[in-house]
Image 1: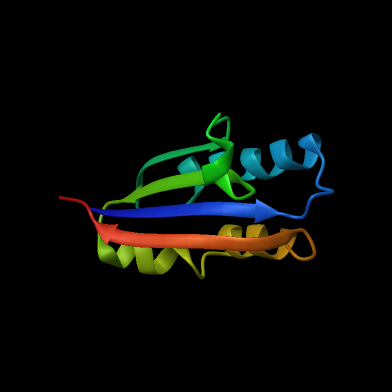
Image 2: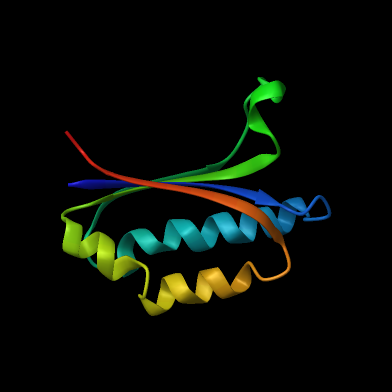
Length: 100
């Protein structure tokens, strides 16, 4: 299995409604993209404000194997999500690693 972690930093003018829309899109991946074993996502609620640096949305996806992880990026649903970030995303951090 492989873990895929992503944290998103949006422009300051993004609305809570848009954040929720993006979160809903991510959660929809769970049943629509093959190879996903588990998926969680949420809007950052940490009170450790000195540590968040403006990152407001997190995603964790567990893939059944490396092939599933590699197939995820070009999947049409994922590509649609990536396109929806145009103009609203300041930065993103992605980490992939084998689950032990």
